[in-house]
Image (tube, rainbow, N blue to C red; front, side, top):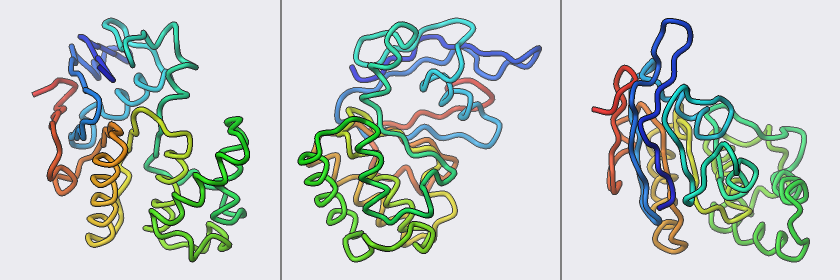
Length: 212
């Protein structure tokens, strides 16, 4: 099992944001967690990444609890946040190389993966462009490529296609589906957009802090 969430609850003061949330994700699954604004999605993501602790319940990645194995787990997770986290003053290729170097990747391995990812996400024509000069869709492709550099076991997308035009959104989703088939990677997309949940293996609906 890639991810096991068991009976998670979280409150801030008197406000109960998550209430007994449980679900699991198996290897190679494409899972959509959908909920409106205020449903508890951001709080759940913070718990999954170890940025906050649940009041009760447990979270396990790869059979290991997040409390005692956070660094190990984070090294096997790729994350794309809703807000852009690129260095806009670096070129496309240098954004990827910097990320690889920070994570201690072997130079020859990182260069090969960068080349492959640039081609996969059709960024090779823009590799010398500064990130700030890319379109919104290309910036998102670059962030997904960067998250895949270390070949994570699971890729988590937080509203990753929000704000993109429909054709760009569908192309990115198509690329992800192909990636799942080829690499057997697990994908969890967190979204409020029902258009993102086509062809997924599982839908998890979060409403007012509960799975419905």
